[in-house]
Image (cartoon, rainbow, N blue to C red; front, side, top):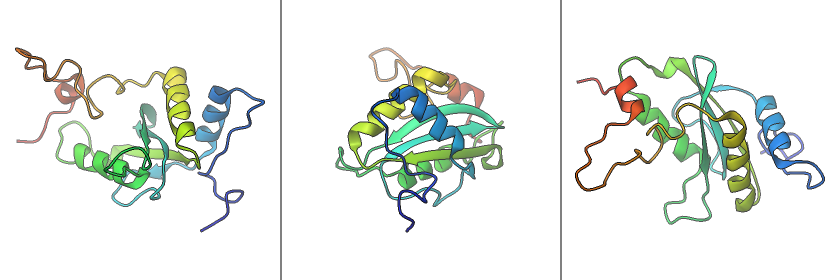
Length: 153
C-alpha cells in the first residue's frame, strides 16, 4: 500500500485553507476510474459518480460510524448493482473518483462541501439510499431517478 504522500486518493485538509476549495481541488486531481465491482479501497471517504462525463452524484462511505461498516468499495459496489439492469444507462456510461480520509469527521465535511459546490443532479433525486417522500402513509412516489432509468422488466 503506498504511503499517503504517494496515494492520489488519500487526502488530509490544511486547516489554514478553506475545506470546500481543497476538497474540490483534490477530487478533480483524483484519477477517474470505471465504475465496476471491486473499485475503491476498504476505507472511509467520499466519492463522485460521473454519467457520460458529467458529475451527477456525491456520496460518502463511513466505516467507523455504522454497524454495516460501509466502505468506499462496498458503497461503489452498491451503485454498480443499482445501475445494472436499468434502461437508458449502462455501467460503461459511468466513471468514479474518490478520496480517502483518516478521520470520519473529514468524510462528512468533505461530502457537504462537495455537494454544496457541485449540486449534483442525482443527489436528492432518489438515486441514493432515500427516495424523497417515500414511506409516508398514502405516498407511492417513484423517484425522478427511477423514472429516468427504470428497471428492465
